[in-house]
Image 1: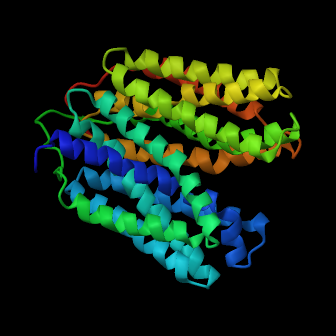
Image 2: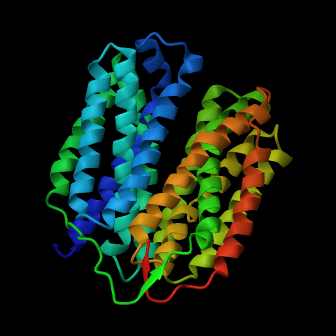
Length: 383
């Protein structure tokens, strides 16, 4: 293993921005993608489902592999899958191959997500919470850049330009990963403690609810503004950007204060911010300026939840963190599959169904207090 240097740590963080971009690729190009394959727009959700199913599968598998094989193989495989699948998607005229490409694209994205969040504590073992916040800050930057890259591709007349740029960058990243530190599986100590998976239920539910809120709120705040406040679609896009801006700024701040402030309380304060922001949307459903402000507040509140939640898991289960984080992140990814759909049904085409993320925030708060009081196991955890 090569010891991480400040330069390799910076490259690792910047690389995670690509993960943020890849997460937005399908959503940003959904309409032209369905037109390209001559598929009704209402069936476009099949592409997002294929992506998240592929991602969930490899997040689950990848976390387990990181406890058993050197990390370089997994990160290079993830980047290669992203690059090749996007290039195939951009050239194939066959819908079935297109869906398969999106599925493998999701698998590559999942491997990169689990590698980033699992390896971050090993890049900065003195302050894992700070490193997790830092890489997720770069993820947020990528999520902001992604839709703008799509807009640039649209301006050229060929949306596939986004696939070519992101795909080629991912293949280049696979080469870069070959020169970054490769972490071997952790050495087990003499004292082995079996994981009490029941103790991880609060973390699993918390991340399930969080991912559902992140994806659901960012997807439905625009319809909330256009349908209830009767604002323009452009204003709805501003609300989405404000959400991601709040999340990115919040993670930038979290990367500095993590390690200095209790992770448990950072988590609780973040969830409280989400609850206040969503409640504000429900209290002022037709006031455009308040909806824009609350979009930022919700994003800012979301900022510490994912990285700090994983950091707390790493504190409690450092030796089995690869397997455990893979399972927990995969369960969390399920929130992106189910909660936004439920939110849409609750909204019924007349609003953004914002009561769903408010309830989810309440569930997260309960889980955070339960997790705070779960004792840390002693010895080496065997997952």
